[in-house]
Image (cartoon, rainbow, N blue to C red):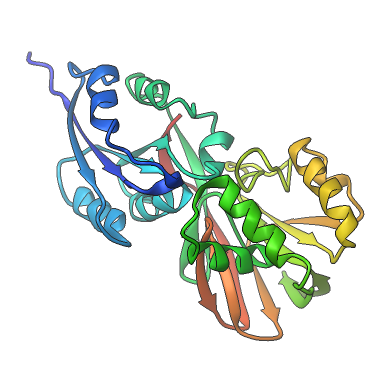
Length: 293
């Protein structure tokens, strides 16, 4: 009986992470097992193009869709593939690569492509913030403010993100949030309110070291207003997975809850900025995305 190759689509964001992806077709040619796969490569040309391509893939005979980009590109593709019968894979090429790092996917693009050949899959949870899906991290407060600011910047990559943070941090003030879990109300002042499906923002900066993409829970990370002199210490704690021990960080685990803030404003979903209202509904879909690791 003839062996049937699996059809695989690589969706490539040419500008993610601030570097060109002209080398990707050659990497795929050298590292993908072409006896197993029939590959197609498409470069995105506009915002939400990755989402459109993933939607076309869901209604076709393509079996595996690979997001070649950062957490934003991954979000567009995964948001379509979750709860479908399609398999997703990641070749990380972003600024932070938070989800890829969490899942143990190599940041070496050749090795990430080679791992697709093994077809080792797992399932991960999908977070929901109002009508937006997220797979790594969502939030509001300072990080959402920075995401909106960073999106307008011509300088991408980690350095650009750090510059935006240092420029804005001294002027940003904590806001009041009401968090309602199982009918119980908690009111907190927070500099940032992060909703963690994975443990980290990206670049191994772990805000919630015990967060898991497979536990059916989100970690509500409440970062209190802190003196500016403490900022380097908080940064050090994140990179050493000890942020949860800081007196400026509190973490609550929950499945479904509401957040009420004092005014409409920015949020981010896997690093992509959006504007949302005062009342936010948060939930989780357990193990809804099938992904190659």
